[in-house]
Amino acid sequence: MIVVMRANTEQEKQDRLVDWLKSMGLGIHVSKGEFQTVLGLIGDTSKVDMDLLESLDIVESVKRVSETFKCVNRKFHPEDTVVEVGGVKVGGGHFCMIAGPCSVETEEQIVAVARAVKDAGADMLRGGAFKPRTSPYDFQGLKGEGLELLKLARAETGLPIVTEIMSAADLPLFEDVDVLQVGARNMQNFDLLKELGRTGKPVLLKRGLANTLKELLMSAEYIMASGNEQVILCERGIRTYSDYLRNTLDLAAVPMLHELSHLPVIVDPSHATGIARMVPPMAMAAAAAGADGLMIEVHNDPLHALCDGAQSLRPEEYAALAKRVRALREALA
Image (tube, rainbow, N blue to C red; front, side, top):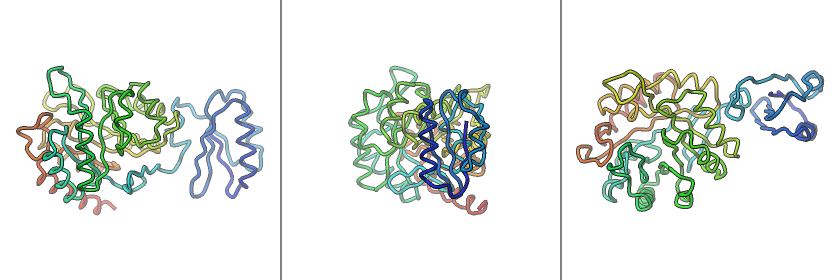
């Protein structure tokens, strides 16, 4: 249920209403916009008298919300959420470019790529230290050493770092990481999501390769219900009947997620296609579809990459793409 307050309602009166609703055992999510305040009622609202609420002089309207996700719901929070990471903003008209290698391999590699993507205008650096792989024999990442190399690259370039966390047990290692990424395989690792909700750190939540949009939003709900409102959704392709691409990039998910939720939505065309030459056209399409940002894999030597070299752009290719994306967004503005 949502309660829309009248404009210029006195704070004291609103606080009394919130206290009364909490006395019924409800959780209250307060969303203050530029022109109105919305109270989101979370819990068993069957005991709430809608007619009584609507009769109050400080209440403009009351509506029931049928969707099971509440905190992430745009009805609860009409204005776009803007997630800020080290001065970089994502959402609400702020477009963010995240770039870097699939996995951190050496100091020389990650620092070289970090410098290259920054020169091309990237806002954040991505890089995997812990790598969930389908085969137990594939490179699993440098783990703690990889995190230290990412921090070194951040010190060299000033770029905030984005890297994947696979287990809540590893949280102490991630205290100095700017954005915690939840990979597709962990999208429904609910214990991990709840722990990330308690950290207060920005979380980049990737859609699972076989999950619906509702399931993605419910996973985000786990994070927000635990107290963390800094969530970025990421569409990275889903598994379909496609036999020539790694996954199918569901670009319709971008406007639909914006319609359903106030959270920023970015797109990862690298994992969606699995083929480097397919990344630029899909990145351009994602920007045109209204994405709040792009996450693109870049490697200085893709032929010898330890992970996902086939989908990685070279630094000069990324620079050319970044320039085209900026031109496209200017044309659409």
